[in-house]
Length: 237
Image 1 (cartoon, rainbow, N blue to C red):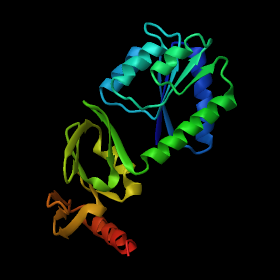
Image 2 (cartoon, rainbow, N blue to C red; image 1 turned 120 degrees about the vertical axis):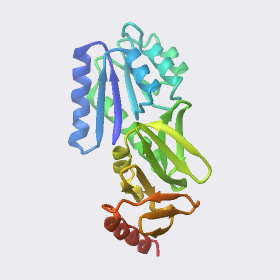
Image 3 (cartoon, rainbow, N blue to C red; image 1 turned 135 degrees about the vertical axis):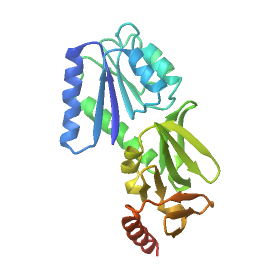
């Protein structure tokens, strides 16, 4: 799933760009769009740990403009691609200061806009294919998927565990479980999503990871877990 944030205080312009993005859904690109009318709200989302694959900002917003919004976001995410939509190129130099990918002049050309978005999402998919990326108190962190032993959920906090380190960030274990299915992760318990690649042993209701950590196996998940783990193991040979 790709997450795109649109930020513009003009409902008219928001409607146009939202309609453009709807074309990508028809192409079966998995996108989810968050629409905001205030740059401060978008900055606050980043501060609270939200992550997006693309930000589309209007230049002339109030109370803070697109450049000021981008500056605030860069405190929490230095790499997220930013497209700035504007009626003039007057502030283009400022856009480079916040590492904006491109300026798009209004009225925004539909095909030009969609091609730019496609390029960003394709690059995002390639770069993140072998990494799990999350936003925490220290900003955006990328962890190689092969290094992840498991995810553990405690209330609204997710702990990502590798053999060397533990990371914490806000999230839902159900969303993590769904996101990691293509990478051979399995929700073995209501609070744990484990990486098959780093499982050493399964015995009764305990999963032992290669680093020695033990994870509980729910009795309701045990049958499906063992079958899936066996299929994964056989596929490696």
